[in-house]
Image 1 (cartoon, rainbow, N blue to C red):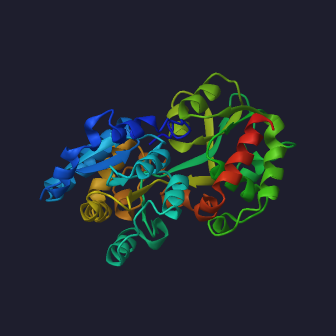
Image 2 (image 1 turned 180 degrees about the vertical axis):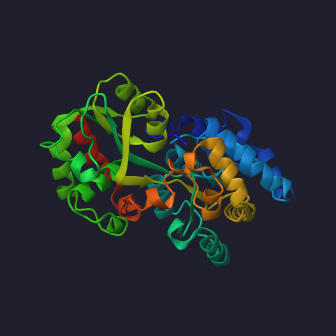
Length: 362
């Protein structure tokens, strides 16, 4: 799954309109459906090919296997704002969703995601491994931001994130994400010497991280805010190297002489979750359990969405040409730093504001 939509801020007006009388989506029909013995789950996702893959490879097979039927709602990168809007309006409309890690942990901290029942959490850990399970869900549709170099313009590409931050040895121009503050700061932590194995549990030393970011800023020619833009600036030759989502990098590599390096890049997961006040909460938990326990369905989804899944059996069944490009493949995952999303959920506003000042030049 490309994360081209992850920096796009969408207005919450549409959600408020739904529950404010402009559209009938929040009326009596929904209450009647909730009372039905065969409710339809509403699952919010990333839309596009990813949403289609989720419907066809996960939701429809779940229903065919006796689970509740489900329908997808496109909410690319706007899950946090729209759930908060639904909560403010007093009516949660969604049952499950797959927000990015930063949004997921923030929503859970604000009491808007349901805690997994103990038996379901244990089942998820048995299937996926404890490191892929949180108190509120499991990682799925996982990406990574990694180093990409145009080898028609460079003799040597940085082999790891510390070298990417070394502007004396590598003075070439760079592109860098304008979005995802905790992901960007995690790369800076590693460049500052924090072992990548410790980033997930280490509080961020914000001043130290921004010292690293300030070092490379003079060499950052473009701050990209979408996957499309990250590809375009490399394709046009506007920059010599970049941090990019892996899926975008490998797609671009088909038409360019690119070198791709994973060491010290950042893991960028999404999480399958259930809303705290979901209309059909138990059925949504059943959906999560079904997905986690069906690696063949996950593998089908990974092929269709060109994105990573956590189940080791699913990964093992995929062709090497695909798994070489996925964030959860052990050889790749072992090189990535995992952000401390829990710390971020406690410091969201402060870090977001400082990062935007950094990007804008403040």
